[in-house]
Every structure is written in structure tokens, then in C-alpha cells.
Length: 169
Length: 184
Image (cartoon, rainbow over all chains, first blue to last red; front, side):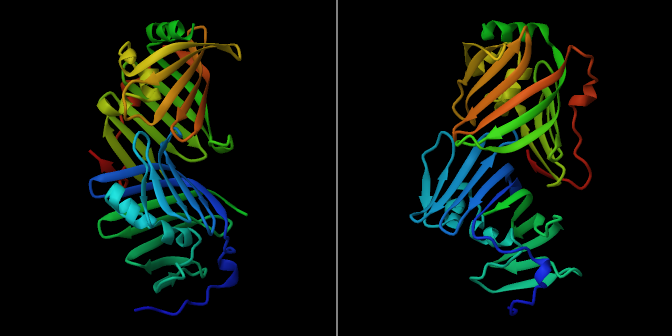
């Protein structure tokens, strides 16, 4: 059942940023396929650049969103394009990475574009979110009130994200 | 030159332990990551990379499989070492003279008191464009890894111990209870 946005206590949620950079680690498991490494994500209203690198820092894949749509660059392969990251990752990787949703979820907020269900912990912080077929569990919050560890899942797909550092402009 | 130093390194240093710092800079030169830890290897094919800061992560090559364990993610990814090691620094570090199968090597002069070589992977599906190795005598001091996105990783080794005796268990990895195991 869809619920109206609950009153989030003001101090429980850090300010929403339009432009930010997240550096952390990501693990994706989709049946037999897996991906794990560092993630460097620069987000602004108009653009996204998500660079996935190996533990030693080598770029494994880069997703770039701009006005013309979304591109996926992988070493030694031609760039692939699609209107949005969801369809692009489904085509190229065989599973969907909810980049648009994640941009909100990493800020402990639902995507304002669609209905959601939210449950909160005793401190008024988001504990779990259900939206667009995904279940987002907030496993750990950092001292500054930002989510540090998230698990994002849907049938057959498990994503774990750790945000090590966060810069907002 | 650097290539001769690498050959002396392969011939003279069968096992090693060292501390390392790792700095990753993006295409505009901005440092996006700084990490450090301990590494060890035993030729051929056995190596271990323990990151202890800013997070805990372990990479173990046991000669057959490559294990990557991230403590925060509670996740272990495992791959067979055969195809993975081909174009990686681990192959350069812990490989044997088959290195020339995976890399074309050329001397790259002297800089910073080190003798350098440049290694370009011969296999196609690597994530590296090239790797530079800097030696002092026949001891590796620094590696620079260049990928296809303009990222540059600098690995600096310190407290390098040549040919220590390392128990085989150091290069064995048993996934901890409760961690998700992904891959073969």
C-alpha cells in the first residue's frame, strides 16, 4: 500500500544536495554474475558519472548520464548507449542497476517520482524503503547522519554499497 | 636497465613481504583514493594484499584461485587465477619468467633514484593500458598502473623483506562464516 511521506524528524536527515561526489565500494550479485570494486560517483542534476574500479584502482566500467542519455564505457569495447541507465545496464550487464533511484536512496530519501513504503528506526532514521520493486535496507549510518551501508535488492539481484566518503557542493 | 632489474628481482626474490601505500588519481590528477596495508608473495602465483586502511579488504592468490574479501560488504568474490592473473600487477610481482608471455617489457630510464621499466599487457582483455615498475638494486620500490580511463594508481612499497620464510597458510583463504560467496 502506498503511504504519504512520513514526517522525517528534521535532524534525522542530512540536507539534500543537488551536486555531490560519493566514493565507496559496491558489490553486485545477479545469479551467476557478480561485480565488486570501488565506486566513484559524481552526481549533479544534469549529469552523473559513475566509475567502477577494481581494488587496485583500474576502471572496470564507467556510466555517464547527460542531456543526450546514458553511455557505458568498458575497456577494449565500443561505448554502448541507451536512453537511461536502467535499460543500458540491463542490456550490457544482463541486470538492472537502479542508478536513478540510488541517487536518492544514498541520501536516505525515496525517489520523489514514485510511491514508496518507508519504515523508520527508533531515531527516526530511514530503516527500510520499498520503491519501484526494490527493497532498500539501511544497515549503518555514519556519524554525519548519512547512510554508510546499504543493501538494495530485488528478485534475483543483490547490491551492497558502502559510502566511504561524501562531498556535497 | 629496468628490465634487467625485473629479471634479477624474479631470480633473486622468491618470496617477499612489504608494507604498501596506494594512491589513485583520476584523469584530472585529483586523488580519489588513498589506502595502505601489507602485501606478501611467493613465486609463482601466490600473493596476498591486505588493505587495512581506510577499510578492510583482502586479496589472496592461492596459486589456483583469486579471492577478494571485503569486510564491510561481507562479500567474497572468487575467480580462477588462470585467466585473471594474466595482465595484472600480481602477475608482474609474483609471476615467474612466464611474465614475458603476458607483457612486453621495455626500459624506461631512471627517475627518482629508481631504475624503471614499462610493461604493456599482450592479452586484450586487461583493465590496464600499461604498468611502470621502479627498482632500487633488484628490489621493487614503486609501481604505477595506468588504466583505460586515465586513472593512475601509484603503489609504494616500504619495509621490504627479501626471501622471508612464509607459512603456506598465509596464501590460503577460507571464507568467513556469514560472508556471501560470489563467483566460481
